[in-house]
Image 1 (cartoon, rainbow over the protein chains, first blue to last red):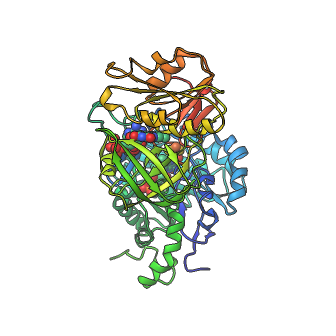
Image 2: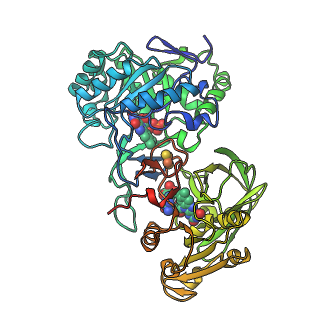
Length: 305
Length: 244
Ligand SMILES: Cc1cc2nc3c(=O)[nH]c(=O)nc-3n(C[C@H](O)[C@H](O)[C@H](O)COP(=O)(O)OP(=O)(O)OC[C@H]3O[C@@H](n4cnc5c(N)ncnc54)[C@H](O)[C@@H]3O)c2cc1C
Ligand SMILES: Cc1cc2nc3c(=O)[nH]c(=O)nc-3n(C[C@H](O)[C@H](O)[C@H](O)COP(=O)(O)O)c2cc1C
Ligand code: FES
């Protein structure tokens, strides 16, 4: 066990740094720049049962210290992810990977998870009940504790792999949703997905995004994410993966002090594709400066303060 | 794709709105005309994409229009300053696609990647003709640079204040073997509607990453969904599905 290593649902990670779903493709673009095997693991693009073309363009807008996206879960569908993307991924990434799953019905979530369950490359299933960019689906499962629990139970029943429920911040009481998922059998939680937002073009007086609204991510959301991780990790017994606005080794440590057992990095990868590698390289020195021996020992270090 | 630090060697205005920017550094990832780079600007979260106009062994040239806060900030940066740049993005043009006597059709700053393409075509012994479209005479730039390559260069202005009056399509009525076009989408479409020749079009879309990771720029084509940043920005006219 190295200083950086942590464990996620019984699977060891060399370090807690995990690129977030939708911001790392299937890894190959980044493998051109660095050996992505330095990562703890990564979460690939949200997968649905059937292929989805995604939303009309523009899908991206800039904000102060962040960005809005309304990609709308563009993906080739679970069968093509398994037959085309996973074999290519196996060539550049040799650790278990997180399969990120979306759906428009409880049955769809379960079916996609059932198909990934048979894939040895997949270490964890991350179930996204929090996508704000698709209509009638996605986020609505994550805003109601009962609905989130129902998805959790359905997924839990079809897989022996650890199930991570990815929660939406677009709720009044995230702790209630988190507890409902825990009670329904989730092995871990990841939070947060993007916050719903919008921009208007001053000249045309129309929303910048074709979808009108989109999900806010990037450093702007870090304090919101940190607060939610802090609340949820004190209320549940299962591990919490913290994400939202992380850009540096300091941010990773802060998120772990808030209660995260591992972290994900999203939008920062799009701006500086080497962010995750740079964070992993910077962690030992940053830990030295802060007199941290191992990352494992600081998880939840701020609780009770 | 490569990420690197580049030094501003030159950053000067060409017209009231357009500037030229020369950046020095490792240009080895820039291998085809029509590729683009993505600049990080201090104070802005997302990078700004720009087509490469020209390159030599140690630097490349961009032509940019000041249209918003990022490009305004860029225009104020003095030589000597460094910028974090992703280079070698996108597919670029195929210099064989347009045959031996292709048209290079540009709207405004869309002429930037066509200049580097013109040089590449000349090296292969081809005879390109440039059609450069602008709104009005005061916005015309880079005409002499194209002409200095020794190629026929036609200028069109929408208001008729310079060169041929009207749009670039008005200058397309002669026999050529194909075309390469870069400019506003309405112009690209009009060019395709004017001529059945083989052609390549360079598209411009809002981007998240610029290197294929976020699906922020995907357009639906006859070949399925393609990422403008990675599978483009240059698309074969035959593959394009125009929106209604
Ligand atoms: C592949 C490609 C090549 C390009 N090549 C050139 C070039 O050679 N010369 C040139 O002048 N311009 C070029 N552009 C357009 C250029 O990227 C935008 O004009 C620039 O990003 C505007 O930034 P801003 O901060 O001044 O504008 P703002 O409007 O303040 O920008 C806000 C956000 O919108 C984005 N944005 C705004 N306009 C555009 C646009 N037209 N295309 C894409 N994103 C936009 C910005 O990047 C930023 O994220 C190119 C765009 C693409 C996609
Ligand atoms: C372009 C883009 C696409 C995304 N796609 C997905 C997705 O498919 N599934 C998912 O669970 N989250 C998706 N997300 C959300 C991120 O995984 C992450 O939860 C969020 O962006 C917050 O982290 P950040 O601030 O570090 O980006 C996406 C985010 C972005 C920016
Ligand atoms: S801009 Fe990210 S995939 Fe094209």
